[in-house]
Image 1 (cartoon, helix red, strand yellow):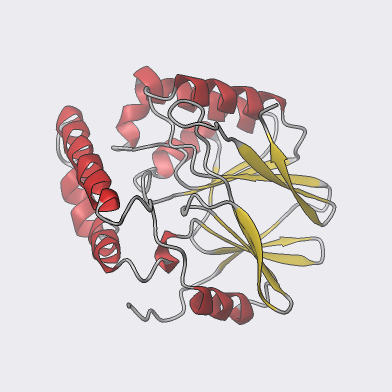
Image 2 (cartoon, helix red, strand yellow):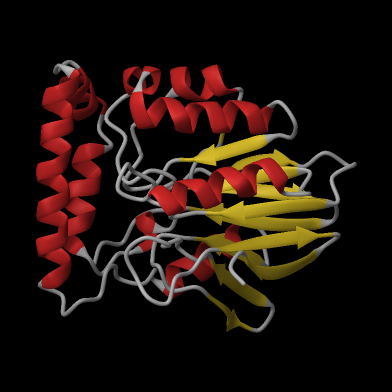
Length: 260
């Protein structure tokens, strides 16, 4: 297992007027998830939250910010822009959409969040992460992640024509599916809990919110330290369907299913 050093922790202060903050992740939106897209668009347009925080994998894949000008990506951009005009929206990249860049977020007026970030809301400190960096037992994934997050790899990838990038991502997705099947159907490894506790203690954050694992749960890691794993959304390919928001309201976190 990889033993990383402590990362740099960004800090973000919520506005004092915010009473409600929504957290979502792992929607994996694509042209193949029309019901998921419709549910997300409806949620973004109607949430009463003062701010929406997206902790990665909003998209099944993102091949570069130049893709935002047409097709499905343009529709997603329109939703983000319309929502950000009404309330703050913050976005942290995930393992599927790590190529979402400054151009895309600036065009949508969406705030970029580093991974990890400590959100200071009132007198609370909440540690936010997509979660994949802590899945240390999956050595193959960590090697791929290190490569794909390097500036050299991203430069070379983004220099390719748009359609070539799309084809390459389709290949990556196929390889990922084969890798997951080889692990007896478990989509992702869980985060390394001792390291998660180390992170939380390092920044004095008793609450940890992350996604990635598709295992929604609230769990006490050690006395006084609690993690909330965000739900993935799937309304197109699984039964039962699921879509859930984790809502912070005046200091209390509550899970809100979006389905009847």
